[in-house]
Amino acid sequence: MLQIPRGDERRQNLIGGQWVAPSTEKYEPCLNPADTREVLGHFPRSGAADAKAAVDAAAKAFAGWAATPPPERGRVLGRAHALLKGKVDLLAEALCREEGKVFGEARGEILKGLNLLEYYAGEGFRTHGKTLPSEARSTLTMTLRQPVGPVALITPWNFPFAIPVWKTAPALVAGCTAVLKPASLTPVCTHLFAEALIEAGLPPGVLNIVTGAGGSVGDALVDDPRIRAISFTGSNEVGLRLYQRAAGRGVKVTLEMGGKNPVVVLDDADLDLAAEGILQGAFGSTGQRCTATSRVVATPAIVPKLTEALVEKARKIRVGNGMSKDVQMGPAVDQSQLETDLEAIAAARSEGARLLCGGERLSSEEHRNGFFCAPTVFDEVEPGTRLARDEVFGPVLAIQSARDFEEALALANDVQYGLTASIYTRDFFAALRFVEKAEVGMVHVNQPTVGGEAQLPFGGIKATGVGEKEMAEEGANFFTHLKTVWLDYTGARRTTNIY
Ligand code: NAP
View 1 (cartoon, rainbow, N blue to C red):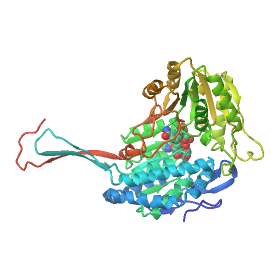
View 2 (view 1 turned 135 degrees about the horizontal axis):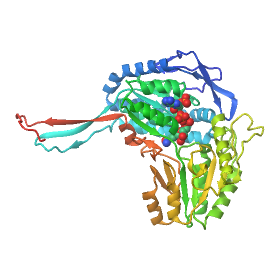
View 3 (view 1 turned 30 degrees about the horizontal axis):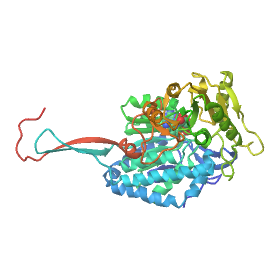
View 4 (view 1 turned 90 degrees about the horizontal axis):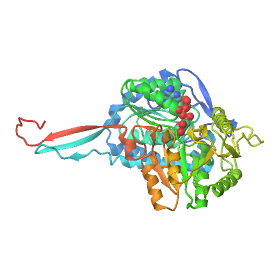
């Protein structure tokens, strides 16, 4: 019976099918960022010994799970999907209260997670290699996909349901066992997801969950030689350090990291459509999305009207506790993220950008106990300045002007990141040229920069992404290796080989 943890409730780590106390005996509260007086249970602040115990359990369970036929593995996910489908509102409430995004967005994230679960349940029937022709006669050659072994899954706080699902489901259907370390700030949805998997019949040890600081739990997972692949989503700083560490033992790694996603708006664009899409991308989820729109690059004839529309609408965004019906934007996830937002705003001002709206912490009666930043828009943002270049991960939008399409494209590409980009135009040729030339892993035409679908590969290039894309078939392929097989059916002794 899934329930949102009560304030005084102590949750435990999931190891070998049991909920067990951490060896450290330490716990930390999960706080609602919209109102920190509200506590959603206390979660283990585990240490390296707990991570090791979780890997022990994953390693022990591996042979049995890898030998379970893939359709059967998928059915466990399918049963979890059926259980969670009846709990969408409860899950959305948990998500809204642990992470802060508004209820409607939280519901959207839950539904996306459920789509992923449904998709990977079906992948149990589709896990496949290839048959390919051989140079030799009467020889069948093919590839088999096999699970890599126990894996570590490390997730950020900004999608506390969808990201744990989009890593766990493909890992499990591929036949891997896993240790999942959710972000310390947002462990609730991960626990509810795990409870559903257990109820759905997932064997003990196949999924293990350890909460605790990345520095101790994360490092212990990354260093453990039994962990054969690591899937990480989070910041560049942590991800690249993890990558170096993991490279020392040659283990498979996928990293999905930061973004600085542009929307290009050309003079012929549908202004209202563009403004709506930009606002959704910039201020939805409080800008705390890797795919958030953080830059607008617009051509001269449309800049004034577009800027006016964006500022007018941004000023009207109702900010508050996401459980209230009329609220459109929630808080920053914690004090530290709020400070990052405010620092980025201060830096933009000192580097000469013009503040058009927002730019401050909200501290009225309704905001006093949370981490609220006003929706903020700057224009006159010069290329090369921090706001043009660095990820903020908050509700801060930068508007830049470009002479023409070519300059807009150059500005859009002028960042280290390469996650997603969008263009608003009615010009078919400009749109296609943008699709071809945008240096990103995902591109949209006449749509916001945000979004992803279970069956479509998700991820970035340049400094955003390392390794295979997530979601879709590619997401599960990461957790497998390919074995190449030759089957000789001549029945005669062959004396020569081809090469
Ligand atoms: P983060 O600070 O890098 O943390 C991500 C995860 O790594 C957390 O579980 C964290 O644990 C853990 N961690 C910290 N130190 C570690 C270590 N030494 N070894 C192993 N794991 C460690 O990122 P975040 O602040 O949670 O998330 C925001 C970032 O995620 C943004 O940059 C955003 O763009 C990115 N993101 C990218 C995508 C994408 O698909 N490209 C999607 C979502 C988010 P603790 O919580 O205990 O610190």
